[in-house]
Length: 119
Image (tube, rainbow, N blue to C red; front, side):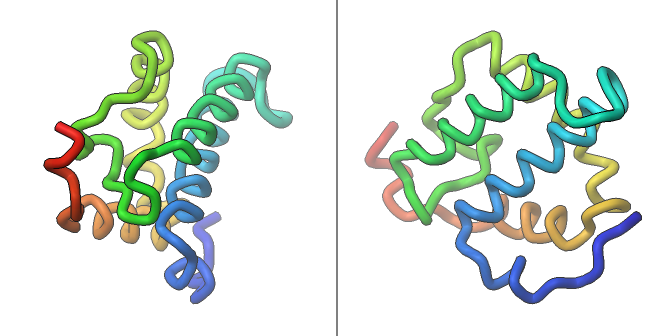
């Protein structure tokens, strides 16, 4: 079930990878906890919210991973939901989507330009 290496993933923009990673994690979580066919309404709402937050990130292409960001833009309820999704899906990402998982780890270690400006 692991994805094959796709050079397009590693060459895609930081925002595109973040969007794909979040969508895959929510899909894995929902499939295991809610429904086997597509996303349940709660997970659709969370995914829409998360993708909207990514699109509106003030850092743009220099966006840090959310765990390393000084600006917490999620409302408390959605923040708890996405943390639950990530706790479940994160370890599975290495097995099912190793390229996305490794790129996410690399992105999380990068220094962000202008990060101090939004503190």
